[in-house]
Length: 277
Ligand SMILES: C[S@@+](CC[C@H](N)C(=O)[O-])C[C@H]1O[C@@H](n2cnc3c(N)ncnc32)[C@H](O)[C@@H]1O
Image (cartoon, rainbow, N blue to C red; front, top):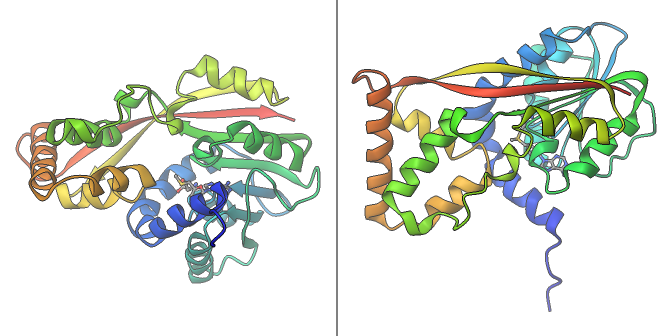
């Protein structure tokens, strides 16, 4: 008899299966937003930073470019391989990347000046455990920084994806209209209260707009299908005709946005929440 797969193993497998596509199609976009976060922090040689749910380096790579010592943690081994390859290609000697669980870090207390997570802890099933670990490993006086999505309708690439899926195959969509977990801190008050409940003080939440250029519907699908396991699971449930209709609807939405062109620039409402330990 095979032992049942633990939830963490299932999560690791789901993210690992996306990692190659995530690195190719998402990281070139998310690294631009990671740079936005890094530009708000005082980083440089001698500063120690930990990036939780680091993916293939959206924040860790720009942070290491400042000369800071950066530790990147991700559950998925292939994400860590890709991140390491990016660091090596840029000669970033102060970056180390390790496979690890952000809800149970193998790191002592008070080790870092800054703990950061971009769409990392906010996608964990146990957000509280992820935030608690970020606080625990940050020294008193250090900073915890979390980047996450604003309200779903204002994160256009996700809203377009779900609207096209609903139009092509309404029955394939989850019955509940509740936004998926990555959107649970979209409300700035809820976000700030959550950071305070984790023990942070001097909490701020800054709204930021991120513009994402898509060259075509196929470029859009490459991004949309590799950002999170959920869209791929939904698309796997479509018939061939529904999959064709899904692509056609999306193509129409992008063309409508750009006055007939194949590609379009979509806006994503983001929040950067910060607090002091
Ligand atoms: C949406 S991606 C964000 C990656 C990166 N921060 C970025 O913005 O490009 C979420 C990442 O969290 C990782 N992840 C999920 N659960 C995790 C956990 N418990 N511990 C560490 N990483 C986790 C996934 O493997 C994935 O790389």
